Length: 337
Ligand code: AHM
Ligand code: MG
Image (tube, rainbow, N blue to C red; front, side, top):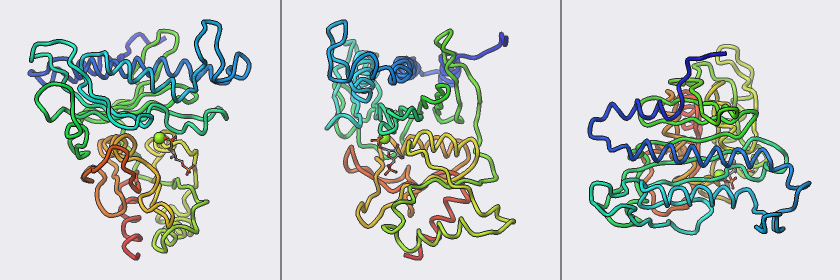
């Protein structure tokens, strides 16, 4: 039994010590998010029992309605963030617009400093099949000085992110986060209820070998993109082609696998969806921050995701993310269009 472990909280506190002016709010916020994810993880593990113990929409034994898991995850996260005293505004895939939050304490030194965007349960179409799903979050510092946050605080460009991360509820529950000094992975030890450091300073492997895309959309893709996919399937030993195709259909799970094994994930624009499917603020931005911290790259096919100016909270964007060389190659093929 290893007795030398680092908990998530210890790690974020140590990171925070790099900044003498830090007030502890970011550590508290990350810790609140980790706690919410532990609770969600617990419910995800029980999801299969809903068929046995009661359907969603039914009243459970405590007299409460059994909630759908994505609604439950949203409720946990939004409640925790609204009451933690660190967040002035938050947005979620499950909410129509952002939620402004009143400061918890009245003195100006403890003004809620952060804005959070989250996808409480990404990949939710996979829940009933016991396939990995996850939570994604993105954190910005507020732009306004005080009071409840505004749309201006929310609509910041991705390079302004202070921290970002995701949790995968898979064969084990893992949390990956960055606060701008590398990307670090923690695994939930359910016996003690703590995320323990399992992979510090993750770097995406140099040798890429996987592409992930919903190829069912092939006929709707541009010629350049179709050519890129064909290129990935050609035989060429020097460039390790053909690549393997892997697609879970949960962004977090596909991204996490490629981060560890090397590869590119794509959700491109197509003839029906001009901006693709995925959301900039709570899917593309946070994963792009992590990809870059791990030595990878992320693009909308033309420019760096982290430089895309947001105009609305639920804005969609095409996404190409993973090994730098792969993303550059995808961009090159897309220039043919
Ligand atoms: P969700 O946030 O509603 O779960 O939707 C996003 C999901 C991503 O996790 C995944 O990459 C993508 O949608 C899969 O889409 P498709 O079924 O079109 O391949
Ligand atoms: Mg999602």
